[in-house]
Length: 337
Image (cartoon, rainbow, N blue to C red):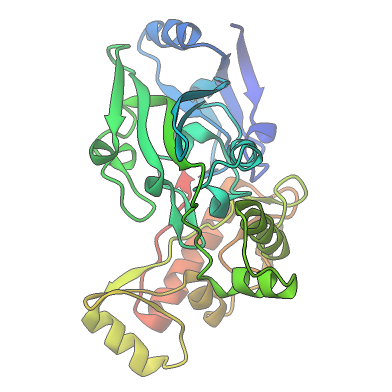
């Protein structure tokens, strides 16, 4: 385990922001993690996973712990299901592809989501009708203060839409080290209700889809709409799709009857944030090297040398305009530091 000073984090965040860490430590074992945490001496820690869901607006005067724990393990299995544990430092998409290669179903709709396994439960990642909580069994974590290991059940994680206990009362208190999933081996519960997925399957004349067919479709959709962070700095969807109450929804629909929406319940409605941002006139707009992607208004991008603060200023301008136009506040999905 090596401690580096004034380490550039440009290659460790998908926005490609040029920010430095006062100290940087990459940990590859639980023992190394506990050892690093034991050396507190009044210093604060910043936990870094895949760097895909964060925006750095300044240098980090902290000990940055890069969680680089690796390994995938089959815990138990039957003829119909399997329990798989993945360590926190595993790349999420590579883990999903491992599951598909072994015909383990349940994660195929979550293909190509950037980031690592350990950060996936924090915001309950989701896409195309599936969320992490649908297959989540438990996760293990180290409590930063005591160095004790704790197992969190699904109920204890308090999963909600892009939310969990790790973004609320447990925020900054734990480091997730592994996640266990319950996946299917037969009779996969396929989720193909989204029109984009159905269109691709129809175009390929696929009537009985496999989990690989769905994964391939999702990858194709995401590649067509979302820029590759290795080519154009971004963090995927920057904003959450807002969920509003019935009265707010009725007021909104009177003003924008053409707007798409999803009815969650008779009292809750989800409105696509991308539509709101596009309606506000930001889609494809560029402000210096900070901008909004031309194909997907939910994605803010760094064209090269944008600072995190410049991207955050753009995000706040979008929030303000959307609120003024529609009466709806859109909340960032990305963590801003």
